[in-house]
Image (cartoon, rainbow over all chains, first blue to last red):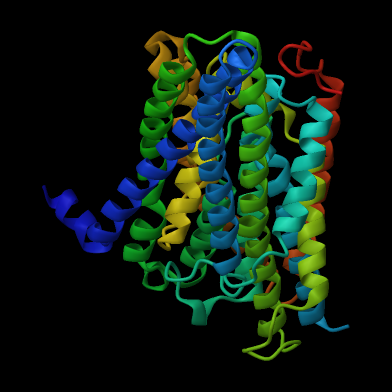
Length: 83
Length: 372
């Protein structure tokens, strides 16, 4: 208990909690978005000739995922530049 | 050239040598998963990482001002203490490279400086709260957080692409690894090259070559960027092998999940002013990506050795830093001590490399990423 009390003294618990949940959200968002890019691109390719509307929906999904990934890259570079 | 100038020259050379070992040692963080899953050929991967490390060193100079800030009493830092701390960090980096263990170069540097400060001024010169808050607690949080994020991340990946043809999925994740590896290399160049710039700038200020508020000179930026990029290019292949294939045998989705989650965790934490060790984060992410698929997929013995190296980093580098300070102090306050220690260090490093070259090379196959 005293070790825990000592740790809370030297660490800003609020900041740490913020780091944990933002890192969790950011990490999962990157995995999710990039997987959607792959899924959308593969499915769009499969349905391109037979079901063009469905292919367009998948292409849209892939584009949305790509936008999120691009946003994450821009955010990452801006973090490095502003440090 | 008086004694102080000689010490300054030795500190600058030692700082650049540390920067080189930092790049050499930490190449694995950036390229190990990329090479392991064959997202890029080994030489292309390290060349790209070296270029991005070099570019990253120019992105920001904001933290290239102090060394071990809030951890040791800055007023008491001398060039001899910085020299001893650097030697402690270099020795630990070389020892862990020799055994193929990924460990934090930044923690080694902090440990070396803390050890030298302890030897020079005793415990009063150490801010133990800062040491716990800035080094010890982040060292525990980084791998656990990255483990969780990469573990959940790989389950998300498998859930989304599980029913698709494996060929295009693997190609897609390999491309993702190139992107996430690029981000990591940039972040590494920005973070770690700045530490060397900070050390050299501090030494120049302490020696009176620069004013207290002077900006980091261009030659310092260029030389630090070059040293870390050169170290990265030469690559610590032993650690690359450990990170890339000895902890888990990973597929491209796991490689992407480990690297992408690791990059996201590092940059999100940096955004909140809570820098985490790249090595601890990526190692934790690799273990998480493996354990989420199958707990027994992780070689826990190797993982245990890595964690042991992390625990030992601070005290071992501190011990070397303290001993080196003590030895230099035996020769007085002049340049004799640093000159003798530097000469002995160069001779020992040369012996280590020659001995290592005489031993059989690491067995690698094309699939695991052949040593070119």
